[in-house]
Structures are given as C-alpha cells and as structure tokens.
Length: 593
Image (tube, rainbow, N blue to C red; front, top):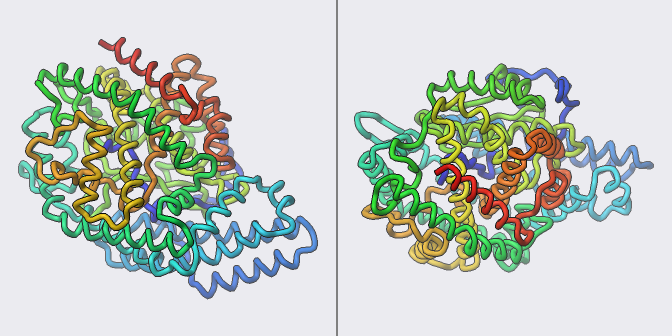
C-alpha cells in the first residue's frame, strides 16, 4: 500500500460548514486563527443540540418568506460547523496519541453521540427534501445538496444506532492495535510507520527481514483482526437490512454519496483495468526485475525500482518544511500564503512517534476555517508523496470554505482525491529541492507507482464487493477472496516465505477496509484524473493550474462527473479515457530508458 494514500477513517475527515471570505489571492480569513495547541471547542450534549434543532425547525416552519427560510437553514449549517469542529479536534487528538486515556474517553463519547446527532440532522434534511419550497431552496443552494441529503436520509435511522456505535468502537480498537505495534529491529524500537524505512531499504536482505517482522505481527494478531472484521461485516449487513436494503453494498454506495455513477459503472471500469492496466503493470514489473538485476520481483522488492534504492529526501522534517515553503511560494495561486498560515498556526503533525496512529489524513476546523495535516514521516520518498497529497486536500478545503453549505466544503471522496493526487504531479518541477540530482529518478518512480496503484486500488474495491455480497463468509473464505483478487489484479505478486500474506492476509493492513468501507475505488478514479492533469501540465502548465485552482474552489458543489468536466478532465468511466492516460504514461517511461 503506497504511503502517499491518505488514511481517511469515518472519525477523521468531517465535512464542515462554510467559513468567511477568502484571502489574498485567497483573501483574509474572517476570523482570527489561533494556534492549534490553543484550539478548544465546547462539547455538545444531546439535549442542547435537540433544543437548538427544535428552534431551527420552528423558525423554518413559521417562516413567512424565502429570506427567513434561508436564514433558518444557515443557522442549522452553523450548528453543524460547531459540532464538526469539536468532532475533528476529538478525532485528531486521539490519533495523535492513542494511549491518552482522556482522548480515548472523548472519542468514545463522540462515537456514542454521533449517530444520535446524525438522526436529528437527517430529520431536518427530510423536512427540506419534502418542503413545498424545495425549488426555491434548490435555487439558493443548488441541487447537489438535495441529492446528498436524500442519500443521507436513506442511509441512517434511529433503528441502527446500536450497530453504528459498535462499529465505531471496533474501528477504534483496530486503530489502537496498529498504533501500539512495536518492533525491535537492528537495535531500534520502531512503530509500524517507523519500520517502513526498512521495508524500502536499498539492501534486499534488510527489506526481507523487515517485512518478515511486520507480517509476523499480523500473523500473531490474526485471530483478533479476523474477529473484529467479522463483527464489522455482520453489523454493517444488519444495518443495511434494517434500512430495507438488500446488502451493505447498497448502503455503502449511499454513504459514499455516489450520486452520478453506479455499481455497473464501477464493474465496467474494473474490466478496463484488467484489460489495459494490468498487462502494462506486468511489463513494468518485468522491467523492474531487470533493472534490479534479480530473476523475479518478490513482494519485498515491490516498492524498489532501482538498484541504488528509491531516492530519499535530503533532509529532516524541519528541512523539508523549509523546502516546501520555498516550493509553494514559487507555485503561486495562493499556495505560498496558505502554507505559511499552516506552519505559523501549527496545523501540521508530520513526525512519527510511539502511540501515534499510522497513515496520513487531512481534517478541518470550521470554526476557524482551516485544515490540519496529519502524517508519519519516516525518511523515505513517501514523506514527500504523502505530504504533497495531504496538502492538496488541505488547499482544497481552504479554497472552498466560502461555499454556502457545510455539504460543499468537502466534495464526495472520489472528487476530493483529485486535488490531492494532482498536486503530487503539479509539484514535480520542484522535486529537485527535495531530492537534488535524484529528482528525475523520483519522478520516474512516482509515475511507476501511480500506475501500479491502479490495479491494487481496484482489487481493494472488488474485494469489498465480494465481502459484503457474502456477509456470512468465514474469515478463511475472506482471505481466499483476497487471494483471488491478487491473482486477478496483481498476478506478479510473490510473497515467498513471508508469514500471513501468503495465506491471503495482506488486506488486513489496509485501514480503509476496516474503517471506511467502499472508500477506495475513489483513489483509482482520482488517479486517472490526476494523470490527465499531469499530461496537461506538460503541455500548458498555466492553463492546467488555473483549472486545478478553480476545481479546488468549487469544493463539493457538484457531483464527480460534473466537477471533472468543469476542470477540463474526462470521466474515467468514459470509454477510452483510461487507455489515453495509460498510453501517455507508457510513452513517458519508455523515454526515460
């Protein structure tokens, strides 16, 4: 799993309310932004929120004109923003220190309260959906909000409150398990994130040894990992059935707000990946073996594409932040001012440490109109990839904070990943600052990894369909499902003598599968869009950047297909789109020798 892909659990990315006016090239924030360590948010209680919601509903029902109705909706949106700020702070602080007992208690309280608050908000959404003034409201806020609210109303109900709380509890247990993992390796005590620098070490024996140690941990904890996921699967299926749906696949699509594409579209995309991308990736892996001078690429060689090992950034955390400041200043379009705000206000946590959850993500705080970047630097090229990836999310979040509704602050997930994956490519001209003479090697490895990700991301999505279409499968059958996915989408993968993964257990390290079901084909869709931006930036960078910045500012005001077209991109579902970007990437890599 490439480290650049953000880990976005249900308790991490919250879609928030609109903020003040934009600043500079973006405009000055409407409120003073405190440093992160000074941020506090009042803990909501069910009774207080109920009372405020009742007052808002009364105001809406008794409104005599459009202005009064719109004002009631804005009051509701502001309430969601306050709750969202609190929820984001609670989730972030728990991820920063999973061992802190108070943070754990705060998270548990939030997870127990959230489904009840969701039910209150959905009741108001149903009122808006059924309102005789709906046309008037759509004219003010746009149709997309109503499409999202319709899916929200159908995907949550008081009847599944118990299941929702239990799902959150099990997800937290999984997060804590992985965060608590420790490894004594070559005289160092390492977290799972820290071990990553050795799994990508230039020395092949070191990589093999580090992977054996990592996967032995999963083998030792397989029973509990299987139990957690088995319970999650059954709870999710039960939730779907209580809501009158066939299975959790239907419910998962509703919760992912897939407004403008269907399971059939995704199945068609899978076929294109199998037919067009898997053969190319098989060629790339063969070329990789030749470059590395080995008879066959084994799993512990997967992420290494050159004999000298992958390029690594030439400095530590502080050095990298300084280089990033220079880079974003040069890029313009408000990125420099925004990044300085992030650093000045301490809105990034990038260093790996014991007790900190793994992965990377971006969250935001509506009360102050700013995002926060969470990552785990370990001295590899992945630090630059995950950092630019999450910076793409952060810049989009900040750029769209003037959108008129909470629902538009973040786009739906596949649209949101366009901003992050595209920024990885838009920053290519500045990679010399991080990698010096190895910058071109980085670009080559980055593009190769982006292509190799497409089959993997498709395998994860297909696996989840199989899991939730057969909710009574045993843990052993689920592991066999994953092995089937590897044979289909990753036929070159060979685990050799590694424990656990040889039995189909690789998927258990993928946090999205446990925490955010069906959040994965989104990365594939966004990768295809990002590759289009990469092609366009090579042809006319100024035009591509203008479209990218405009896309960031639109936030979630439209569904995926409309946002893509508005940015001059073809939908990945469109026949021939995948073929075109793959051909361009193939030609570029061939030109690199």
